[in-house]
Length: 336
Image 1 (spheres, helix red, strand yellow):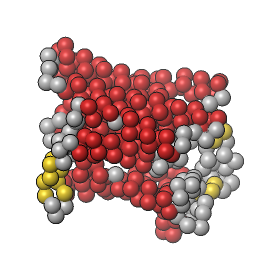
Image 2 (cartoon, rainbow, N blue to C red):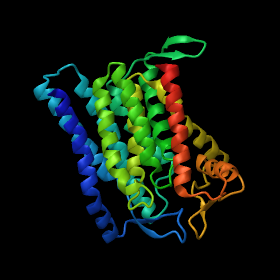
Image 3 (cartoon, one colour):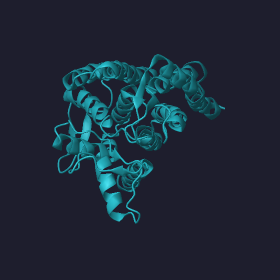
Image 4 (spheres, rainbow, N blue to C red):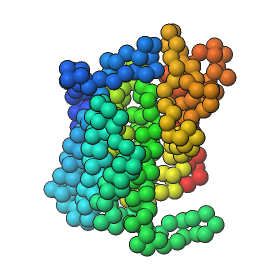
């Protein structure tokens, strides 16, 4: 019975996203909040923006339903609800920051890099004040070290800032951000479940369900883009789950694509775009002579090894997903 009630939370988040998104897309086109599909010939400006708002709302509704089940049916009073609300607060704050960035970016250039980092630090406060997670961490060659007060004051804010900002780097291709979120959060939810944090697994899967509903409209050819409202929210949830479930080591390992993306972006002074150079037939070319992102590396490798030498947007997305799945498989055998 309990399992069925929890499953309803996942269904709610999926259905809310899936059936609300068409109305959102129409509304965005009506108000003119549409963005260019940069990897398509002629870069058509007809894709609805900030679809992540719908996803996060569906996520919040699903989580609140789950909290109600825990409170009134399971009579659970072990403090987990406080941790859920703290995590929910971080996700919501960063979603709002993302919305502001989307709206400012629609009119101008969006928030500055410094402002984004400061706001992400501020958003971590709910997890800091409840002293989330465990201050004892395993370090290579050093073993277990108790970081004490430095864990909530340094590790938690740095984790939130790092995950939210870097998750936003690996983006710009139809279905990429949503697909990556589905893969990473599904695995973290699985790990949380088998390590005894079943409540955290449910929260993660509620977001996965909402992302699946969104993916149907974001996959190529996209009808709606996630916007920073979603990428920041996903990054915050990944970091929050890692902290609350003491999954930092696994989360950092499966986050390798984003570490590599950040390194490559820094190579270009954080000024180079991830987008490719589209041909008239829809195939993609390298936008620069050098590689400034995993997306560019994917295009380079596919052109080198694909018999037809023709690389399309789906090819790039699927190759990055395959890399992510490989890391998840390795993490399963190495860390579990």
